[in-house]
Length: 499
Ligand SMILES: Cc1cc2nc3c(=O)[nH]c(=O)nc-3n(C[C@H](O)[C@H](O)[C@H](O)COP(=O)(O)OP(=O)(O)OC[C@H]3O[C@@H](n4cnc5c(N)ncnc54)[C@H](O)[C@@H]3O)c2cc1C
Image (cartoon, rainbow, N blue to C red; front, side, top):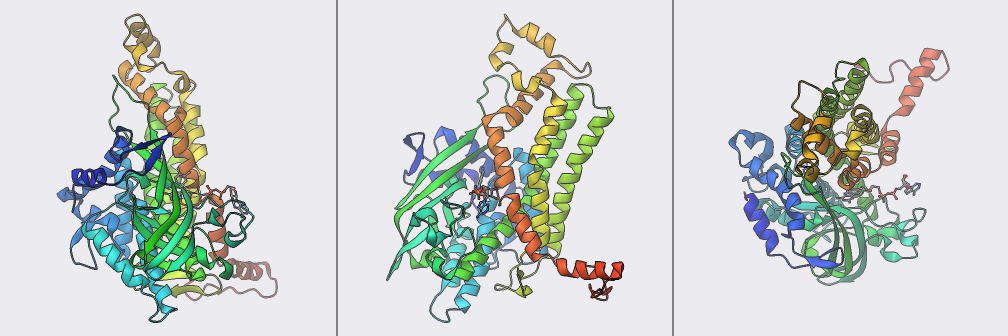
């Protein structure tokens, strides 16, 4: 397994294809340091003996010990550990740990490439291609990101009906030795610091959309790929340092006549499988949210409780109510993920068919619980921001800059007027308002909230998944029985009557 330094050194050798604010930058540009440190923690923590079971796993392909972020889930315990590892690491960086996209995309492609080969007996070897790619990904301990979201053009038009055929990434040409793709994936987190980019479809596809049913993996600096990057760094601090400085980046990935050799192609034209792949990645990713959102809940809870303490209002009943609300959302999100892990099976839900065996035997979390957990916690983002705003009061928005606390002409007075709770040092109170300002009032804080709301799919996507997969009919039959209507059935849930 690699160290953080190996990871950064690997990135430093990549070609320059990152465009930032009108100029080309290196992957190790200072701008990306905070992001590299955030992902770097996944290497540091995996190397600690006490984290061995949580942060590493044994590869089912090589029998070697690998970073859990590169693992294919072999049983329920793997699903539980991914959730717990995610919560642990996100707590440490105070937000998104950023390496989950790779594991979620790898698990989705692993299953779908296997099923797609079954409909093309002997004609395609997507799954073997993927296993070869995966073996290298695991052995070299690479960082993967997932490029799913397309620019999508006119939202009311399906891919093949768009006036711009590149509104969704598509196969433009099929050659003997590979395919040529074009299009643009956007909002792709950590692509600018990833070794490999896993590309997969974003939505259900029709037969006429078959050229959009494409999945492949390329290094982040591949020929024919440009990345236009936004970097989300907090305002630098000179005097009052943070305990940990998180960073994140997102890229527009522009594929311009980009050649992908067959050995890196894992789906090319099977439209039904393209749709399933889109859903399956989203499912794995929503399961990751059941680890990260509870961690973010932990941080929001600590922040709200401290804001109340700084204001010396922590014993007030309205504060207790708000803290309880944050805890309920975080822990219900965690419980949903835990249940999704525990009910995990090598099966997927196909509308009209129910749960059917899927893939070569790796474990897939239960769809309903992944979706309810992610929807509940994703929608709570703005309510949680509202609670922080409420308890903090206005100071978080107008707190003076660092140098004013250093300038002899203002420092003493500012400290005097910062003091609220007599039992807490005023320096700590000032440091706390700086921290809360980062979360609530900075550009980065705003971006994080949008990401927490839409990342993994907007709440409407989870609501569609929940209502199309949940057995609403059986609930109707139950109520018909209770109401004394015709067609009722008290035993609609079977003898055990548990699910
Ligand atoms: C910070 C951040 C990081 C992200 N990271 C990644 C990443 O690493 N990889 C990745 O692949 N994606 C990533 N995403 C993308 C994320 O998954 C999408 O933002 C999300 O799926 C919503 O898609 P959209 O942004 O295109 O919004 P849209 O889908 O355009 O949604 C906007 C509104 O239009 C509505 N709408 C859209 N289409 C229809 C329709 N046909 N009919 C009716 N209503 C419609 C939606 O319900 C919504 O209300 C990230 C997003 C953010 C903000």
